[in-house]
Image (cartoon, rainbow, N blue to C red; front, side, top):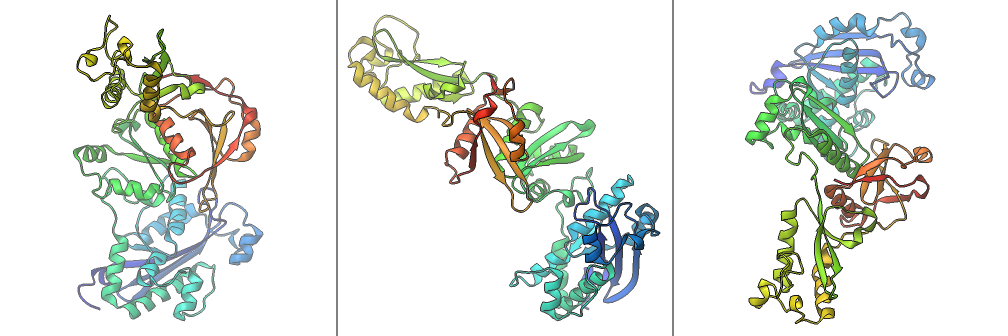
Length: 483
């Protein structure tokens, strides 16, 4: 071994495998743990036990693992071996094939006892991908076949540990200590976790879409964010991507992270918007909804010329009669001034000058063609106004009533149905079956500028995708609360 291979020379690697009653650590339990300890090229110890899972083992799992209900009936509970296991794994590198599975179950068992468990984790699936990137499959059976490893008793803890350690030693011999050490070192690197969070906080986070929340002391909500990969996005907060003074202050205040998974990106975006505006987290810049949205309405005056006026009462069922959504009167007037200047429209008819006798001020400067004093043909002027305002016209709701936007995640198997009406997100359902019991009558929902923009983009195909939309004619329409 080369002296500069510090991880391989100095660390103790705990090659660990578990067998379980199923694949979900929130309710399934461990039935067997096997560990082989390896240090400086030598196996230095072994630890193995069956565990009574305190639940029945299904016939399928019994057939797969060979571990029966009778075999574990007199085995110790996890609580009985927890202290010994923690001592065995102390100061080791926790090595497992698809480590997130094994590590997640071990952590869950400790958590049931009110204990926290954390370790440095090395995944041999990731190690294989890194060392042998030319191959597509990296499951244990593939590694055994590809590298000519000895056959073992699969789906028993020490059998799988033997295969995993055989792969590790084979890769070490084939790739060399220097390359192996560098690969392990890179895989063990972690983002700089804030001091008040568990060092393994990222291990529990899902790798799919959803919304995450940061909490500070006394469970004060600091920040709400969304991502198509929650774990990756949260890690970026700790890796220097957010090294502003604001980001540093947030990290120093951080005490807890939680999250809500969604089936897709649209659901995550809508949930993020809703929670930012309802929960008002301290560090989100867009921390609240606009109190009074402003839009522009065009109507003929007594002389037949189109006249603009600002409106605050927006009726979602007739959005096509409004032009633009603005967070303030000032923003709306700025937009009107730009349109007037670009198209030589009358400032007085656009409401940019107080009502008075005679032409508008811009007319005296030659920047108005005379609609204010009858000097421009009414048909021509109105046509120019309609052309000038066309791009600002709000999208009318293209369906008869509420619709369900279906998002499905093939990786997680999750399906969300986002119930939307007049560009407002009303509810999120878990399955098509829930639609039968859905009624929106009497339910209040806010018309929101950000939600409007997001849903127009998603549902009208502006983002290049066409989501599955289900018409929900029979569920009624929700009540609309104006901001």
